[in-house]
Amino acid sequence: MKYRSQAVAYWYFAVAMGLFGLQIAFGLLAAAKYLGPDPLINVLPFDVMKVVHTNLLVVWVLTGFMGGTYWIVPEESRTELYSVKLAYVQLGLWVVMGVTAIIGYFFRWGTGTKLLEQPLPHKIVIVVVMLMFLYNILMTIRRSGRFTTTEGVLIGGLGMAAVLYLPALIPFDNYAIATFYRWWTIHLWVEGVWEMIQGSMLAYLLIRLTGADREVMEKWLYVIVGLVFIAGVIGTAHHYYWIGVPHYWLPIGGIFSALEPVALVGMAIYAYSAMRRSGLQHPNTLAVHWTAGSAVFTLFGAGLLGLAHTWPGINKWTHGTLITAMHGHAAFYGAYAMIVMAVISYTLPSFSGHRSERGEPLGYWAFWLQLAGMFGMTLSFATAGIGQVYLERVLGLGFLETQLKIQVHFLMLLAAGTIFALGAGLFIWNFFRYRPTFEALAAEPTAPLQPARAAV
Image 1 (cartoon, rainbow, N blue to C red):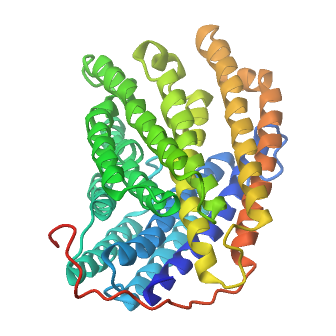
Image 2: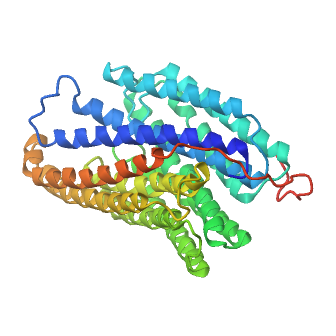
Image 3: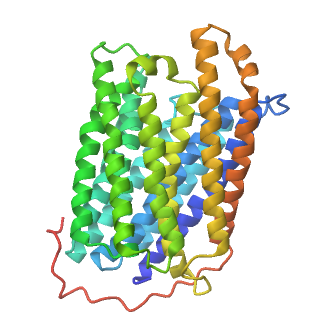
């Protein structure tokens, strides 16, 4: 690594990997519960498993984003972090918040707002942590006097993710109103500003892995950000089907939501063209696999599978069924889990002199097993969801009767989930199996550099 303070990123990645492992364990347990009988129903019921599984996903991905930012910003701004101590205090608070929130869910301590179940004290800690994080990053950029477009999109995405969390702090007595504003946080995170974070990390990796021209890459970033804002923001209305908003929101949400894949197609083309021009010459081919995989799987999971059920005429039958789970698993994995693992794979050789620059064989096994497992899980959710929609919402069968008739798909889900868990386990083992050694190369001088943009 070029700067000693980039070592901070390793500890964020280590926490993210621990939480990732827990998320997979709780996900497998939740999938097994579909098959029954459930001997743990009074200790670990399905609803608690689902809350823990989904919240761990959000927390580990955010932890990975913060670690990736602590690696990327020093390199882009060509300086050490403003405060390493502040970064570690922030990580400590984040871990305490996450652990106590997970323990609290087992005792039903939460707000009951899906994906934002954290109690108010935990939400306040999240706000404090985000403020500390943004302050540290902004001061690093300000001190360096160098501000690139890649950094701008990354910081813009992280800053807006923090601002969009604010509706989650407001309590509502009416559940429909709470759900309306909840989508301002959730949808605008995952189909808006988080895509800015993914796009900027993708640009950073492609510039370094392929030697692609920075100016061209950053122009693509402007296109992606523009499309995300046009389609992602108004497309939020495709979540309004069942919550009593005026009817005109439904076609508006459907049309703009259908445009969202355009940005993702652009991102996949952008990655492919960069790889083709470079001839895949970078020694870290494992990071190249994860980077290209993130762009392609995002197009598949978020783009094509989202488009498949976003139109109101289809969405009214599929909303809230296992079809949603199909889209959600593939989209989240491709867009956010894979880009975090791409950054980790790129940085790992810098954290230990014992690692091969090309990547360990275990790393390639982890990549292909995860990909095969996630593809199988997506197909399992899709076939189960189609059966569920037809039996439950067209024929009018009861929920439990429908679940019994589609159990074979849950066997497929458990088998595919086991393959995915094996791949995830190998990735985590490969991360921890070498002791980190944080040896910084000689830092480049900062004084003679001309700022790429005016510093904030």
